[in-house]
Length: 209
Image 1 (cartoon, rainbow, N blue to C red):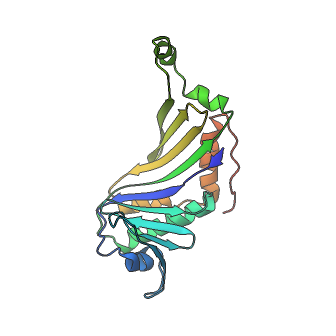
Image 2 (image 1 turned 135 degrees about the horizontal axis):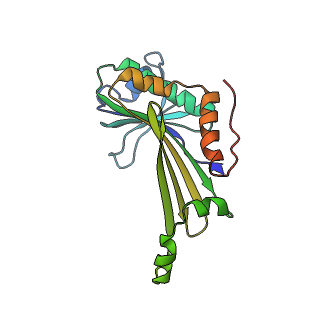
Image 3 (image 1 turned 90 degrees about the vertical axis):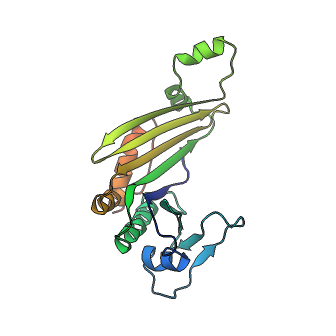
């Protein structure tokens, strides 16, 4: 499987008047005041600004902070988590509701094993009724204390399969959310490998601490 977009999301009532591009630079990326950063301004004037530093892109809206590393690797995602923790620490008055990190993979061509995981008995009845199935999806929520992992597999008619792992913690406690995001690349690799192994696929990630 090929690694796709990975990111970190912290849901809460973020103050966008504070988390301007300059505010993101100092509070999220912990850069000295006045340090230049790369800012992508949306053409439509509606989407949030994208602030780039250390191969990570931070965007903030009134209800969520998203940090996306340019590389889909455990090391890069853990770095993005550290930036998210910086934001929580620098704005302790922010009402928070959840935090999580998302890992996504795509498989092209012969993905028979994964396709079988999205096939259910209902498919035959639907096909027998003359309907063409364009796509399938299956989702499971797995307990991983103190949060959950939402596992979703989506298959398309062309044979492509998408696998999404959403490591999610619902909490209003900043310390709990920070702890959820404070893991090592080795721990993250082990989490991903364990889950992907259950799908009959092989994942090789960074084992660096």
